[in-house]
Image (spheres, rainbow, N blue to C red):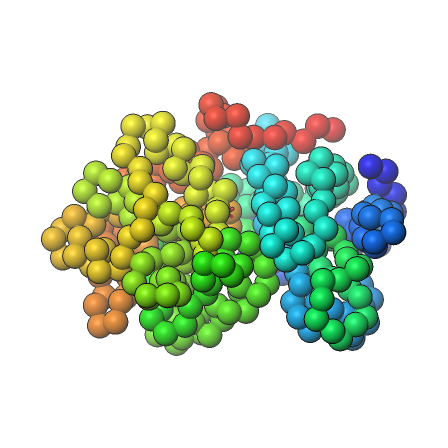
Length: 356
Ligand SMILES: *Cc1c(COP(=O)(O)O)cnc(C)c1O
């Protein structure tokens, strides 16, 4: 794929203090953009200065939400290399989302090339400090100026990048999560397994309720019986009960996280018993009452591993592992971030170094 590159003539100052970056507010100097139409397919790939785009107010995405996205990071190692973590998986998943939302797929190698060229051009925007990274947001949406319901004929594929500090301002201390019993995020047959804005729109009311009650995130239950645990906000969820590590099985309503599958693969390699199955909130409460619930943690690109210290289900506020990070959570966090920043050998072959 040919990519036309136009460099900015007005580079922005690169933030010096990574600890003040936060998440998703600062953007690097350039973006990738590629339009699609029925006649030409994906064409005119371009990297240009980050800036506003122009859309018709009738653009289809604004009315019926035909949009998909991905989220991954570029990490700077101590020796100065810049690298990605299993990025092909993100673009394979983008195409799974594309199919579900009737959006034309993008060849994985073209998406990888776009991403690599963009990160190379904005390499100085990859933060230097531990835990900080360049967050990468690829997304695709329909732009036809048409207020009617059908799949679009015109799309944009855009990649923007954002230097980000460690995800949780409180660091790795456990989070409190709230079990949502009213609202649901997704159902089997819906779009739960895709990364699309619509799933997040569906989650906002529950998230708002959780915040009002001083919990940072929502634990979603299944949409049919409100009984089985699905996932947390933008993370998959794991429970350690006695010596079994359990995570909800993927049946269409749960997002197949890349951190999730990586955690499963590592735990299996370490000899733990890992089970993907249905797990009810009653089973978790019972295990907690009986002292068998050892650890609960979320997995996702943004936070990597997020220990859960308190799980609030109705009137039952369960404190887990004394509100401290557990051993398995810690081992996973250290190993995943160790591999991502090349502090330990990449035995799994997960890292893709960017070649300059
Ligand atoms: C992105 C996302 C995750 C985590 O996936 P990773 O690939 O591990 O980052 C989990 N749940 C939802 C709803 C998500 O959108």
